[in-house]
Each structure stands twice: as C-alpha cells, then as structure tokens.
Length: 151
Image 1 (tube, rainbow, N blue to C red):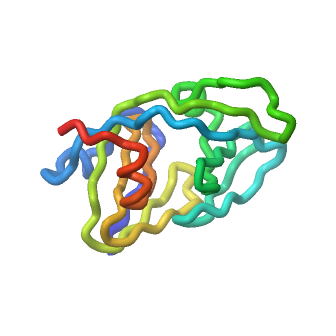
Image 2 (image 1 turned 30 degrees about the horizontal axis):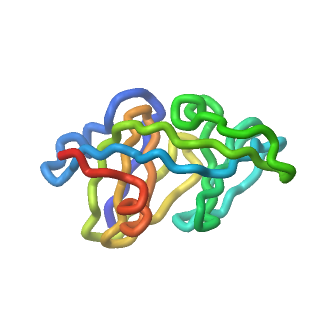
C-alpha cells in the first residue's frame, strides 16, 4: 500500500508532481450546501473520518457525501450563492481551480495535514493535490463528475 502525507504548505506535493502519470485537472463549478462547525467534530467521509475544527466548513454534495474544508482553505474554493435556506446550511458554488491528480492503481492512504485524519483510497480512485498543501481522495465516478482533465 502506498502512503502519502499532506504537507500543509503551498505548492504541489513533489511525490505527485514527479509522477509521469499525474495529470492537470480543473475542478468544475458545483453547487453544494455548507454549514460551519460550531465545535470540533469528526466527519465521516466515504474515504475515512476527518477531524473538523470550530469554524471549518462541512460541505455536502449533491449525492449527500460530506467532507470538511478548513476555514483557511474554504474562501478560495467556494463562494456563497444564497442566504440561509431555512435549514442549517447555505448554498455555495465551488470555484474552478487547478489541481494535480493521479489515478491510483493500488490501495493507498493519505495522512492529512492535521496529522490525525487518514483517508483511504482503492484502485481506480484519484489522489488529488489542490496545490495548497492539502490532498484528497476522490472516487473515479466523483472525479469524472466534478473535474476536467487538462493534460
């Protein structure tokens, strides 16, 4: 099993950038629901449990999948579309941004920058490097629905 560790600092991860199989991709605009954590909480994602801190965004996609985004990283990746929708969330749209992505051929894990949360990927999943020190695991179907390959 391959293991990756998010660095938490800007720039693409050298291990991914050097891999000849890595491709450039762009995140598409996608509408999501967002609420902000009022206390530290564990968010169960499809890839593993991720710790969210007070103020972090908890994002819910169209299929109901949830994932946290750090408060620091959220502003550059999402913009608000609506005021409070009557629930506890607000509608936001993801801002197109370029990433590096590597389709994995074997099981892998990613230790996030918090040093605690671990994501797990299976063959066919994508390892996505956002270029801001954060890494993610995206299923093949979700990647095809939300990213455009550039190179």
